[in-house]
Image 1 (cartoon, helix red, strand yellow):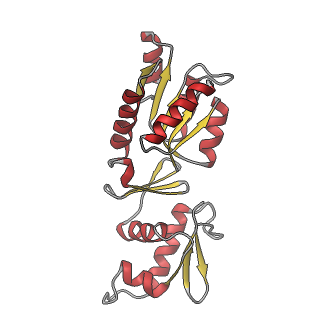
Image 2 (image 1 turned 180 degrees about the horizontal axis):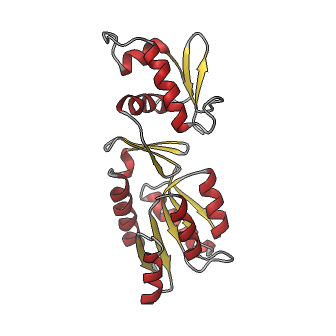
Length: 225
């Protein structure tokens, strides 16, 4: 998962913003059009959308409307259109903030920091990114493609253990000991049940899991997708 998806058709400006935000600790991706932004968000996820209004084809207002219909990712509009009516239109469509061009990079970075912290309840450095999943360890919240997942305490702990060990085969005994404790009165079957429940929430097809795969006779392996 990227921290910021920049939607800006001015390549020079986008490059400058990417350089600055990357130096400021953000992971950034750039697209130059509205349709491209929506396509990216269908396949990936971002913690914040930095959105220009005057885009070729599908304009920023239409992008903001489409994003709000699908997910709750914070939207920061960045535009040379600075009239009151434009700002009100952006807010009415669900934008979280509006910044005028030319932007001050330090002010922009501060706004991004504030929006991410407000939306996810943690500093972005406390967030474990795992493909389209993001695990917010301070608030114990998990997002898939920008949408929050409803996990119980053990499902959360299980996912955090898996995501902290991508590509590794973890033995069932090790997983059980880490989550329930070796002295627990729970049975090992509890692990199987919880893995099954977790798959229903994070897999596209739980019957053919891609994230949590079974290593027969050993345990499970987690893959980032």
